[in-house]
Length: 457
Image (cartoon, rainbow, N blue to C red; front, top):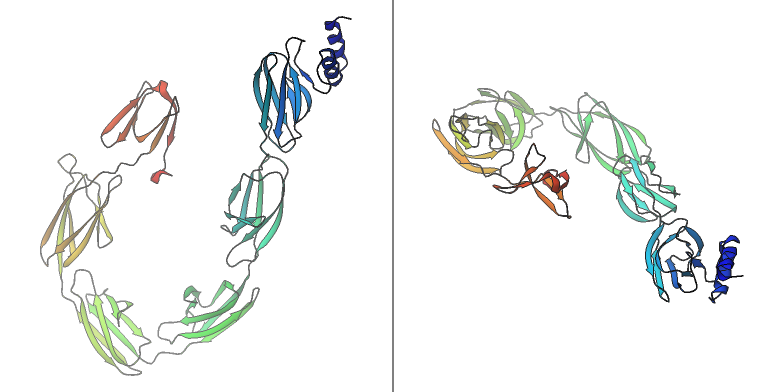
């Protein structure tokens, strides 16, 4: 039998038998499989190793064995593929020459899952196998196949742990519902309408139900105008449903404060107490400092000596104290804020790029803080002195911001970032790359155009 006849017969007996037969016929060591139609004068050796080992090796589409193994191959190009359950298949193309020994190291990456972890309430802290991973909703993309223990915790709720099994790359959704670890209070008062605060936080008006009261000790206060505050120290446990009924006591002294004109803000001992006309009670006897403040009028003050159980009138005759401000901006459509209050925006004027005059009347005399704000421009702040009966003037040119909003991906891998100016009919894109600098990108150079969110996120 000729060598070729022998090779043909060996190939018909199956891949594994063929490898041994060919190796013997060519003088190769037994157990070294052939890859490709090798002949005696065209052999090379390929050592295939993988991490992890035990991967199934395929050479030129033919399954050989598991790694590590050595293949006898003929001259030329060969495709080596390695696969293993739980790992992503990897492959490598090699070129061999007669008498050459080549080592191929193939790295197999583990298959990881796609898991979205949600919680009720939202924002719970998530741990996976004891490692903190962030807050829900959480996307986990780096977990290899297997079993995990997922824990969720949030303030005001009991911690909960659940099992998670990842079998493949199919996306999963894991929703964890956290039970409340708090108590509920039913609060009422006589008379009703009292404001309820717990540990200084407003929680409603009586009668009301207050939920999510954390286990532990709390300070409860019920306050009602013309009545003394009602206070209690209360200790609760998770799951408690308690009732609180308060009988409120009237305050013995009060002030009836009015002004001409009405509507002035009232401050009693520097505490805001409403607008005139107003009755202020729950006051202790002694000297009381009263101040009223109304836009356009001078601040007025009085010191009142108040006896216990007394209701005393306090009347203020306010004196007008205002001036005006004229604002001109470049450009127009600039919002003007005086002492933090939006007073409108400048409008386009006769001159291009310059606004018409915005006149603001009834500004309190004194030093006023003026802020100018416009989209695409840096905010500006000025201090202006307003004189009683006078008119101040403010003329300002805003400085434009340069905030890139577009990223253009170019052939060759470069990315061009700037402000999108326009798209030309021929498909080209005009981009402002810095203030006043424009660049036209031909359509043939553009691979993709991506928007950039405000703040560059």
